[in-house]
Length: 296
Length: 343
Picture 1 (cartoon, rainbow over the protein chains, first blue to last red):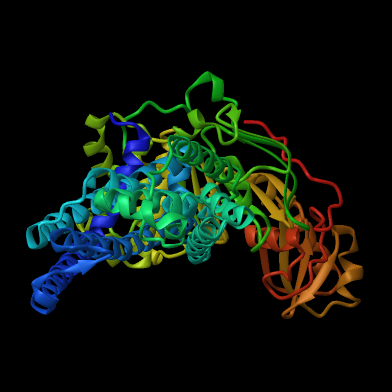
Picture 2: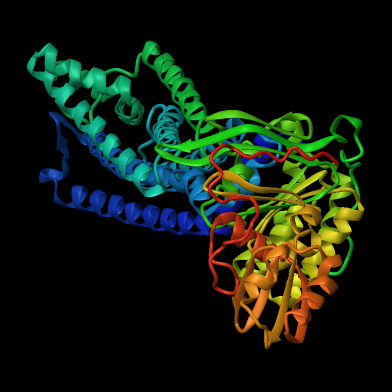
């Protein structure tokens, strides 16, 4: 006999499958990969045919290294778009799983059974977490393989990049679950996306603060990364997708690169990663507490 | 809905720990902000009885069920289910529940919904098949068990809800307006199921507006209004009041004067009605009327109906449209009433 937590998680995954979520995600992934593959091919062709004297120049470097920089930046931009789709998917899948079942009345008979509210909530979270991570990992691998085959560029630590990408989606999933214990599905989803956007802007403002040497402004970024660690994790994605040779150029460019969200000088520090784990524990605990006290 | 309720896990109904009261509440209060949904509900439901929980819309019936199942928390007071605090997980293992708002996973088949509930109820895996088959049979939806719930009619979904509630041979089953979406045949079948459950010793907590149904199956009722008990007790006691209707002409003086010694007399639809009359005194009434020069055309002794008692208790107009002027439990009870009757 499996535990009720796993039962609820499995039920959540089955619901996603029955509601044709898998099918839609597979189609979207296939379209995205095909589109980006076509784009990468076109860019490569254009660069090679239009470069003066056949030599590519980018960021002060030339030849294959310049091509690598360009491909890496394109890959990061595509990943940025993908991270946004992932964030939206996590939020829209998570928002109705609890709030929707409460609103429709499906939760009434389930919660009258001998299972705890925390088990129910964690089971829902686990089910969506598995879905989101499997989707992110498979799509990410396919994209990286296709880009690698077309351009020859493979990031130095793609696995880390995927882990951070999943982490970012899990953060949003967790926040949405917390909000959906008290708000309607649509309100929780909209609120979570707005907070996500604010945190991203907070990170940009913090980067600008670092670039211009304004510690107070830089602290805005630090604070937003602590409150919602999505931007900090996004920086981890970027760091592990960019070629290591780029770091030398970043070093030469000085602090100004901090203002640019698609170039990252250092990976997320261990203290930040520990904070992220603590954040998960705290928000999930808060969500469980909120749900246990919720009148149904 | 023809088969007997499913058999399987041993019932707690025979457990000495719960043999006294399956459900008990003491001064149970529930407030939602300024709204008082339940105002000092005290009641005791003996194990194995069919308990009718009645009241107009908004009386607090569904709130009481939610408190007993732990879906909501009381503002004050106490409630116990099968000898354990309301909402206790172990007690919920032996409870079936058909909510008034019955909704099930539209993307699952009926059989899959039941399997989910078998799993969540902690039933042993080998018993799932027989339990599910029996519940489907009892609810009368065996033929549609393989279809997605999203394609069920409202009545089918309510039958599925009944099947869910019957799983695991519960010691207590809460049925909140269980026939609201059923056709007359379905209602008749539901009555058969309730009788079957009673024979098995299952305690049935029945919220319903269909008073004739309640009258036919319940042992005991509580009538709730504005969160308070306004009438309570064994059904037989509540319906013990008798009335007499007579059609008479030619009386030499007003009927009220002639029959004053028998109790309050009303006149409606050309009939005289004497309320609260002992049936043994019917011949005396006829003799008195004849002695007063009356010609008696019709004599109708009758018992109070639950509908009349309900209307009387909640202060609503009586079924025949008259104001409730007769004796009974007053609808403006100021203190929380109590049903202390035992088994």
